Each structure stands twice: as C-alpha cells, then as structure tokens.
Length: 340
Image 1 (cartoon, rainbow, N blue to C red):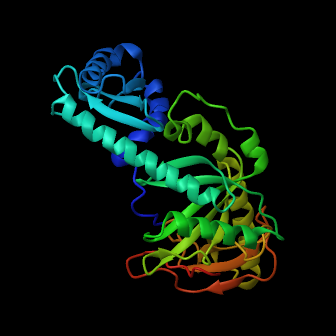
Image 2: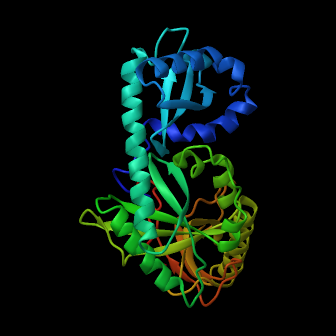
C-alpha cells in the first residue's frame, strides 16, 4: 500500500528506538559498547555546536564494527531529534569529519520536527490529536483517537479525510491513518517527557500499547497527485491471536458453504484486507480463495478462485456468499476485485 510522499524519516533515524529492543536481546544496546562512540559524538557536538546538543540515546549498529548511532536533543527545538552515526575506531562519522555530518544531521532533525508539527497541526485543525507516529516504509503513519460506530464512522472518515488532504496534499498511492479507541489512548504509557517529541511519539513502548488492542486503519486514495478526502475506507486490525481466530472462523464457514455448492472444492485462505462495509463497523467484506479440488501433491491450496462475502467482526458470514472465478493471473499473482 502506498504512502504519502515527502513525509520521510531520513535514514530511518527515529526507528533506532524500536531497533533497540532487538539489540538488547542480542547484547547490542549496552553502555560499554557505545562508550567511545558517544564520547566522540559529545566532543564533536561541544566543539562545533556548544550548548545546542545533548545526548539522549546511543545504540550499537549492526554489525557492531560499524560503530554506533548517537541521538541528541536540540536545545532550541524540543520536538527535534538529531541522529549521528559515529565510529570511534575508524576515527570519524560515517567516513567523514564529524562536524560536517553533524551539520547534515541537525538539518535533517529540524526538517523532521517541522514535518511532525505540520502533521499535528493539520489533524488538530480537524479536531484530532496525533498521539503516536509509526515510521514504516520510509514514511509516517499517524495515530489519532476516535470511536467509530455505525452512526459515526462515515463522518469520522470524512473528517480524517479533510485532515489528510491538509497534511499530505502531494501524495502517491494512498495515505493511511490509524485510529485508536479512547480507552486505548487513556491507557498509554506516559513516556519520558525529557525526550524530543519525535521520539516520544514513535517510541516502541507507546506503539506497542497502541497496536496491542484492536484498532481501525483509514485509507485514502490518491488521485491526480492529491489525497482524495472523500475516498476514505477503513479496516480493523487485531492482535495476532485475534486475527488468527477471525481467519479460522471465516475459512471454516466458507468451507462448509462450498461443500454444499461445490462438493469437490478445497478452501484456501482468507485473503487480503477485510474492509468495513460502508457506513458500518459491524460488517466487513473480503475474500477466501479456493481450488476446484484438493491438489494432487497434497500441498495446501493457494486458490484459483475466490468466494466474496460479508462477515461480522468475529468472521461469521452475513448474507449469501458468491463465487468469483479465475482470480490468478498468468504469473500466479492473486487479482481480487477491490470491492467484493
């Protein structure tokens, strides 16, 4: 799924907070392993930008011989984080003199902070607070708080579409917004208020808390280079176990239905995104693939055809399914219609 252009996290710098959780498991975020790199970064900051930069995080890069990523706060911009790659053993910063790399890193940090402020202002102007920001695929996906229901989901999608159009006027593909329930937002960890805003809103603990409960994602299509605020549609994301249970319920129900209409058919898997039926949050539309018969080699059916159906949030079918034949392209690519 495409995302908005020109909303980049240059170098994936802010993702370092998330990577650190993995590094800890491998022994990579230790203070000792980054000590010399941190000292070199602090020395460079003091020489070139006295009083402007304070180290707030340090992590070992992979492989360990590549040095460390040092993250600074900016004294004159509480939203900004500055990340610098340092390798004390190699005597520099990414093969260059540290002063030059610091200048580039500060400019990039200020640019990210300004982009974050623009995002937050656009959503605040529509009445929504950005409570989290997920870096991914080089772009930002904001988290906002709302409580869609059958009576409100159309309005909420329209409201967020106005926010998206203001935030990402020059986009490509599609633009997404995650929607956290109010009770999920109320239970979010406070985080370290001393950290720059860009780090607090993208912190691993905060994002894990947001994604740890079911949440909606609203997607907006880009037409003629602009996000269309009227194109919003949404799907429900679930924790892993809940998602597996949903897929199992849908697949089993489709298998039972197929046995009544095509006894030799072999069900495949629940495929793709299950979009909310327009104007509802208790009906979802999607597809389950199937084959005309079990594979002769005993392998699982990938699916040459599909069953389109509407289900409730647990995966139980609502209404009559219908069959769509020949959904595989010549190269084996699954080609399902956007609307079941």
